[in-house]
Image (cartoon, rainbow, N blue to C red; front, side, top):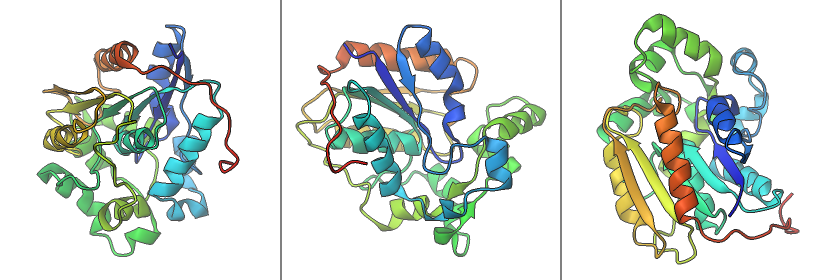
Length: 271
């Protein structure tokens, strides 16, 4: 059984968003790695003030390739868990035959899956902004409080969480998902590790209908594929009160269903 977990963050967040999950799993005796996307390694406050000038060029392939390189540096294959765009990256890495099990939480739009109505509305501030494909984009405090994490009780609490966690994100990533096939997945891949999809019925970023549709596609694979929808949870589910229930479901399912891990050795084509 593997004792390594890789946590993969999504857009508008960096690896600091996994601080509670990382501590939770480490207390259970697991080695937990939570790599940042390229240029996301500083604190959210620093990133908001001064994002790296190359961040505007960061897209789907570069991010996924960076996670693949991190996986090959590990001593054993990890359990892969991702949120939002990170949940799409998990599916892509599984499609590359990496990981012993995968958990995709509130997965963002995936190539071949119709957009849900909430997802269309939430993507408009980026996709409707002129030149966003070549710019670093910023989330407004209002958007965070009313759509990304609308289950937070008060605006003051939302502002505090915004200050602690929210970072700029490259608009290119959104356009990669809309205009290219970079995220195309082989749904019937016979080598894909087991996958759990988790959605939120109150998610205004990644509709639960999209999560169900991804499940319908992914269950074509030979390995186990399961779906769990939390009816009252939002896109902020990994940090909302009760996040431990989501974290425990993700871990328990992975331990029960993982395939046998392999020892890893860095291939010559990964740097």
